Image 1: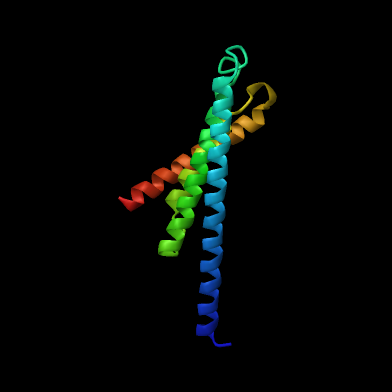
Image 2: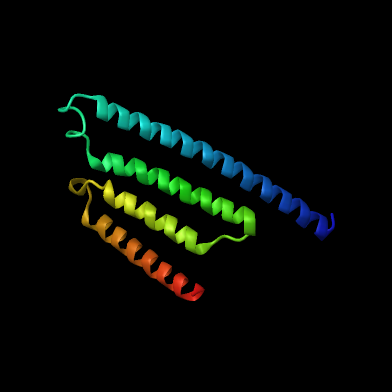
Length: 138
């Protein structure tokens, strides 16, 4: 097989995989939004003592951020399909949102200090990376 033919075939496979991933991510987003809607309806229509007062805002924020993370991943896939380049800035922003979600839903009683230091280092590293990428593009 000649190199040009192989590269053309490889491009076709890459395009098919990217399109399959985007369809799968749309499915994940729709299921997550439905799950969020069902969760909110249950909470709103339950008795006041079982409803919003008992429901942790962490759960609600966690579900919202899960949808946001899925949307960002879909954006990454879409950008890749359009330009055939992984956009580092989008990946870093998605990572920051994922770490923020982890912190928001974190149960501080069940986490040791090493994990908190690890999260702090991850946030600092991602923030510095984002700042560097933003300054390079400007």
